Length: 137
Image 1 (cartoon, helix red, strand yellow):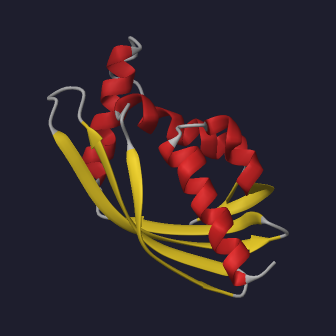
Image 2 (tube, helix red, strand yellow):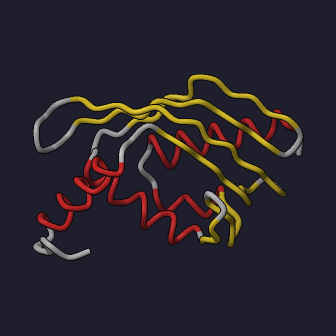
Image 3 (cartoon, helix red, strand yellow):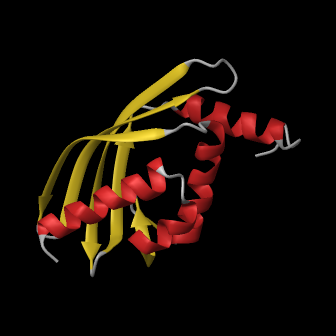
């Protein structure tokens, strides 16, 4: 596939999965096994991981700020925004993702963002408290 075709696939992935909150579509965009920040994973594991983020930020939205593609790789700078359900305050963070595609599917994905470990832990604690699992990891 061309670099332009790969850009279109990544754009559809962002719109469908991140902005549409459609975790069932993850496998449409990822290979059966792929790497995420160097670690092997599957579409179902990835979908499970982001489902909690969608539960916490029910209005989560990702905006692609800039996109570049070359051969089988697509990199993009993004901003995510959502409303904190505990406070009603808007929250945003920025990041960069780079994906390598083969046959129209993501086989390798790297990302980095400015969301802190403490913020992630707060989301986990909120989800656990909501589900009656406070204090478990």
